[in-house]
Amino acid sequence: MVALYFLAGAIAIIKLNGGKSGDLKKLAWLKYLVYLIIVVSVLSLIIFTVWGFFLLALFIIIGGSVEIISMFGKIKTPLTFIMIFMFYLLISFCFLLFTKIDYQYSVLVYLVVAIFDGMSQVGGQMFGNRKLVPSISPQKTVSGLISGIIFSGITIIILAKILHLNFGLLPFFYLIIVGPAFIGDLLASLLKRKTNIKDFSSVIPGHGGILDRFDSLLMSGALFYVAFKLMEI
Image 1 (tube, rainbow, N blue to C red):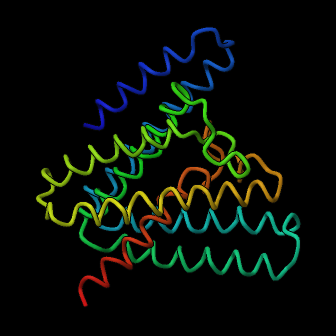
Image 2: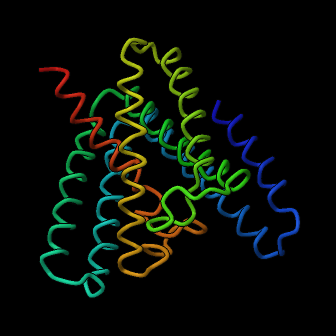
Image 3: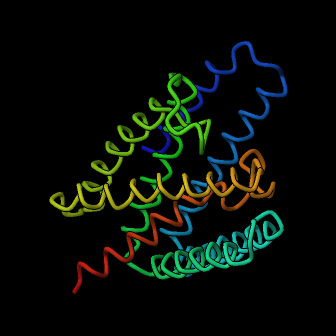
């Protein structure tokens, strides 16, 4: 399934690269290849290791903390910075706990978020004209959001069958994964907009910073964990 999505992504890049300069073509393929490596690596850590995903989460949280702290001088007041950082730490704590629940839920959340992110971008680039929230994120389009919703919806149905999950809970799972993923991405975009930066850093080639790549996963994983625990009560 993942291979099919990346094959579709490669075909989309070939189509979108028509007429672009050599540098832009190279950047598109770099972003694609790095994302492929990230997705395969994260899935491998979740499925084949005991502590791998937890350690990755620590790396993401620490890296994200460094990126936010580096923005201190660009945020208007110390109080605003403290509120932002405390919110980030709360989300990060819940995300860290999320990595320790049953691995099939980690696979579910990660793949649905990854497909939502990836296909939103592909759909937006191929069919996007109408901007979704131009005042916050000029790159997001209505067609991109629709593409992300459709393909992530297909993904969660397939994964539910593979992972033997309760189909009755799928609508709830879907909303608690995709909704926070979208909100997390918007919040990150809003923070960048308010501080006049394009990316949180340049640590991930073609993608920007840690938070540029994992903002949606942080929010989805954190809220999925909270919802998961509430369901156990």
